[in-house]
Structures are given as structure tokens and as C-alpha cells.
Image (cartoon, rainbow, N blue to C red; front, side, top):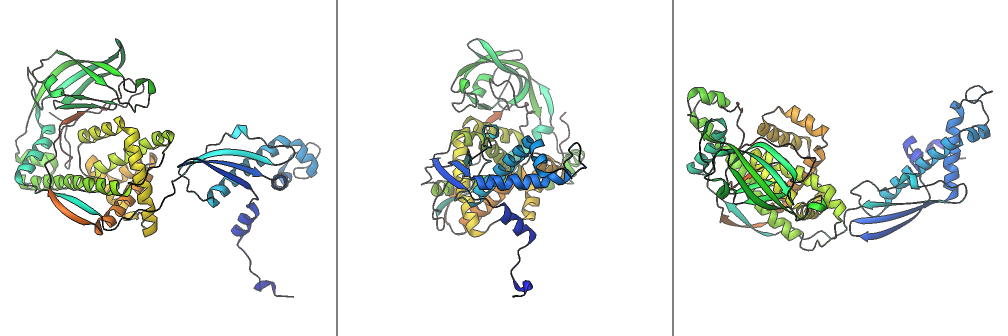
Length: 493
């Protein structure tokens, strides 16, 4: 007889996992590139095994009249608690079999299985069969990413650029002077009544915007807003026609034409504050104007690096996704649109952009949500595969760096920003952002560059965080025409 101590013995966890392994008949259909329809058949032997295990667990604690707790016969317990046992067996079989299928199947799930639990029945005899749909990552060969030829934009941040950016920031701290007639860059308080076929479908009330060439909403954009507003006086009634996005989440509004009836409630011109010692200290504890200008220059450089990296990333994405002609289901795109919006906002925040600039970009993404999300998802799938090949992951220090940048932009403690992101489930979005950026950096290390001059970015859009025609609306954001956040933001005078 062999010594028992020499025989391989599994851990309790391994024994438990082995005991839960199911003998399944699994059929997987592919209705689309990112879709799988799974049919699972569980043989009667497995149902009986789960039934016996469930009853055995119930007997020691079952309370049956005429018997002490845990002393009733097994058959009597099974009969008395039949419905409870059957429901528990059904739930256990579904949970364990779906987990086994998703862990062993040759696909990578990107969503939870879509299963109608109530439609599944546990039969008295014979096998149990159920079906579910699941969204998966497309299968593809990783495209060649080394040695890409890219153009890299360059720009010298001279004193003139710093002056312009500083002026944009200081506008938030100046005194408001009421004027009779609107001019470019003045702040106009508007109330807007959006109508379709003569009926009001939504409104915005008393919102401040700067007079710029474009006025952006979540599902439309008004071109020539400056031409409409310049010369207008307090109380003026302005009208414009807008065409809503053909990708609006409300199908009844897609491509609809609406009338905007705009009332100018007031017109304010911002007088820039003088950079006195008292104001510099109030602004952020600056001792000299030069110290303030250095902070402004740093913020401007962060924004330039964002634009530079964004242009190169667009080129990389275009190269990597050339063959990515996958059919992405609209349900997947609509569900992922919110995450793509979150990712874009987090990137802009960590790069030092103002809320007005962030809202304008967010509105642009909302108007083109399906197309922009499809492009972002294709890029994400490919970058994720490259990250797996290169074993790239997000480290704790990466999270700390990103959260610190966002906290600085929001003028909040990093701990508060992290807590809010955890509560909203945004750390996964942040993780994707970190990993994608690391992969892009690795691709650029292997790329060949041609440097080209970059024109100075133009801020030509004012944004209102409002979805025209939607009853449940995003709260209107207070207007911010500045170029970023310094150490503090005192209330406007």
C-alpha cells in the first residue's frame, strides 16, 4: 500500500471547484462580430446532483412540525420545501453554468449575459435548457504597430500666447459692467425657448454665455451665434433654426428642425482686474506677476501637449483601425457612449482645460455619439490587445498622478476626487485611460516623426449643457470662459 502522504492532494478550494464543474452541452452562434447567442443544455444527472446537494444542506437546519430542528427525514424535508429547493437548484445551475461557459469559451465578454431568468424552467424530468445573449470583444489579428510614420505638431509658447491665455483666465475674476449693446466676447444672459411645430419642447433659463461664433448644445449647434448676438440690446428677441443630431437617443428627435426663441436678459462686459499685490495673493498666493505667468505657461503647455498627443493619437488610431470593419451593435454603442464621454472629460480635466471648453467638446461627442463611440471602441479593443501582449497594466502611482491633476483642475483635495470617482464607478474608466496612454507612448517610441508647425488653438465655441427636447435634462453649467484653473477661484465681482 502506498503512503497516503505521497499522493497528490488538492486544496479545499480546488476540490470545491472540481465538485462544481458541470458537464454541459454548449452551442454558440455568432449573429454579429461582437455578439454571441449561447444555448446551454444541462443533463439530468447534473440537475439531480445539485438537487441532492441542496436538500442535504437544508436538512440539518430544517424545522418541520413534529420533529426537532434538523431531525426530520430527508424525503419529508424535500417534499415540504420543494418549491424553495427547486428555485435554489435553478439559481445555482444558472449561475455556475454561465460562469463556466464564459470562463471556458473562446471569447472575451465585455458585458453581463442578457438572460431572462423568469423564462427558464427547471423540468421535472429530462435536461434543462436555457439561452442567453452576450456581447464580446471581436476576434482579430493585432495590426502592425511598430515603425508608424507620424506627423508631430510643434509650437513655441511665446509671451503673446501666455498673455492671451492669462487674459482668458483673468476674465473670470474681473468686474461685470453692464453695457447697452453686445459685442464679441461679451457675456450675455439668455433664456431660450425651443419649439417644434409651434410647441415648446424644452427651455433654458437665465444662462450666461460668451458671444462667440458657435453656441453648442448637447444635440445641436448654432453656427453664427456671434453674428446673431453682436449689436443686440437688453430685452432683444432673437430667433434661429437648429437641426438636431441624427444620432439623438430619442428617435423621434433625430434630424428634427427646431426653432430657438432667444431672449437677451442682460449684457455684461468683463473688466480685467489689475495685477496688484493684493489681487495676486487672493488669486493663489502669488508673490509676483512673473510667478503667476509661470503657472499660466505650465497650464498652457499641458493644453498644448494634449492637442499634440491628440493629433498623433488620431493618426495612430486611423492606422490601427484600417481593417477594423467590425459590425458593432447599436445597443453596445449607446451603452458605451456614456463611458466614452467620461473618458474624454477626464482627459480634458487632467490637461487643464476650462469647463466651457470641456462642455463644448462633450456636446460635440453627444451630437455624434454613435460614430465617435464606434471609433473609440475599435481603438480601445486594439490597444487593449497590444497592452495584453506587452503586459502593460495601470500601477497605483498612475492613478495617483491622474487624480492629482484632476484635483488641481477642480480645486479639490485628491482624496475627495478619488472618493467621488469610486462612488460613480469611474476608476475603471480611468484605468482604461491610463493603459491606453501607456500603449500609445510605447507605439510612439517605435514611430518615425516629421515635425510640422501647429496653429494656435482657437476658442470659438460657447457651450450650454442642455439636450434640446429632452424632459430629463442635464443641469445647466455655470458659464466659464476662462482657460483653466489656478490655485483658487474667488467669487466673481
